[in-house]
Image (tube, rainbow, N blue to C red; front, top):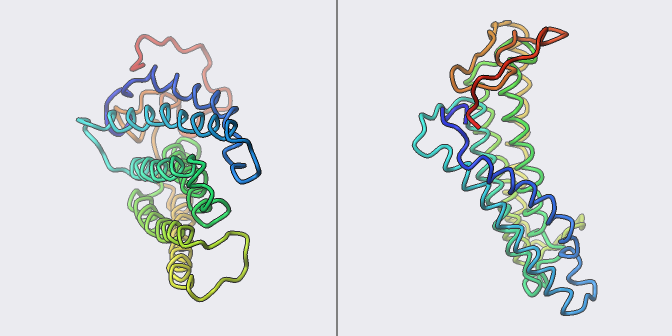
Length: 259
């Protein structure tokens, strides 16, 4: 919303979708246990329940994309990290729909396909979201700016490395490579090699991140109260950077809102 210079599309629908994911998440737990001897009726229920959770997830993804559609997008460091999160989260969601099928899960359970799916959703999705938030709020927390080119360089190195690290693991899982094994036949070596290369590239991205933090605190380029401009409309951007200890001396009066 900030870097598209548009209000969030379908804000209320997205809020309900997040609540729905939280509620449905309590009743899909046995999709990890299709191979544990569950009855056919029990498996059938958990297949449908797991499929249902894709609906509110799709609402969120659609709202994110629709927010950017037609907006005046600025590809700043926080924005590219947020877009990367959407891509990786979507890939993880699609592979999750595959694993929701009890019949398919017979052959993919406890393989590297599950490892790839899990990391795309909870590792890469979460990590890229965290970095988006870090680059966005770092100027407010510290009062200094990380050069934007460093944040964007970090993103591209991490994005390439992360996909090279985990995407080949889908192919390993489809080929029957089990997880939790320290050794494997030579037939799996090719994709493991590329996955290992990806891990080194991703690690190099972390070095760029630490370099960016070092540059921010050594050059001490002042961020100002609102370095992101007119799109940043939430209350924290009305304070100094970093905020004072007591923040608002009087209760802010909100006269308008994008939501």
